[in-house]
Length: 501
Image 1 (tube, rainbow, N blue to C red):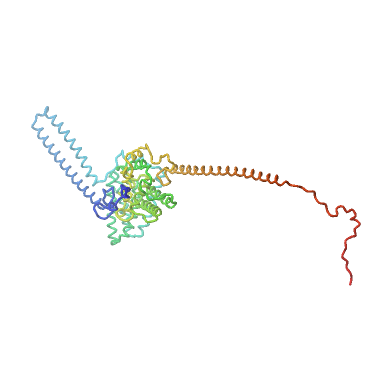
Image 2: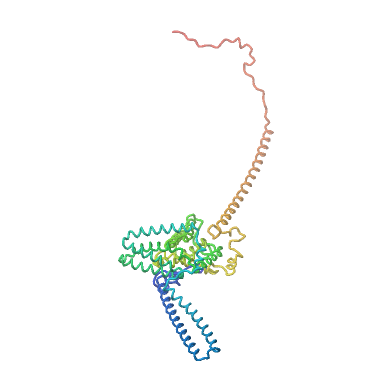
């Protein structure tokens, strides 16, 4: 099997990441493959067409209603008053009620674009039922106050323009409080329109200095989205929560996918690689704790850089884009980040569009969207499995890890519960220790046998020598003068004498 066929379903041509209109910016699956700029243009055109169609329909229904009223009024004057007029009036009443309901339903779409709306009582009750705990509210309040103070301190460096920016930002936040009934796309359009308006004003003030504009817009985004986070992240008018649950269940169902099936060029046996993988997983999970789209993007960028480092250390060469995407898919499967779809949609809707269109943040975010799309469409062919095996693995009837051969157990780099992996490693270590203990016991028994045999052989040899050469013990010889009894008659020994000269 060729390398290209092995990577089928995982390889993505870099040109596929760009906008389908060929503008050169990065596209996004949530925008039907378009960049944020082209998507907004298409969205505004479609919205204008919808508004015109709704107005045309409303006018048509109004004319039909007026014509029906005139027709019924003229016919009631020509017919007899009692018996025959009742059916006609009943028919017209039903017709008028039907047209009025249809007109009201259609015109509501038009009114939403031009007038703010307030929440109804049932929705307020549902919000009251979801009141966060005091600790969460206190923490968010502290964070909001901190961001507000930082924003004011930053605007002080801009002097007069800073006051105008603060005024515009506060006014926009207050206006968004009256638009909670809008759909997620309409909320996104409001925020993006404000970004565009503020950016144009800053460009005129700073005379085209894009660096200063970007610096100010980063602070504006941080201030606005921190204040609006609770009302625009995973709004009730969207199906983000449903998508989150579907993605989470999908990733859980794919728990059996191994690092080898995805052709991931990462060796987690290397300590530095294992550390980079853990950091990448931590970053992608930490994304959910951030409030500002730019901070969530920073988590994705940090995760991607750790992935590139793991590939570089494993291959001992710079990582390629073809290696990056399957590794990112593996990290997402292993991490199963909380509220993944909601975070992606939140970044897509409310991030400064310039960040998603170009730069490393936009590139890494586009790859993450591709990774999630791949996981949703993952099939047997993508993993080089037969359809039968894929279905058995997905249904839980079998697992590539449940083999009789102990060598088939997953290694530390496989997608498996860490506790089970540690248990397997401990059992494998104990098995090796048991084998070594048996070898030591056998060696000790052999040594004991050899020592006993050596002792017996030495004893036999000593006995044979003793029998061959018996030991004779002779009597002890006496001293020369031992029998001399007249020793006391001997003269004393000579003593040295001193003579005086």
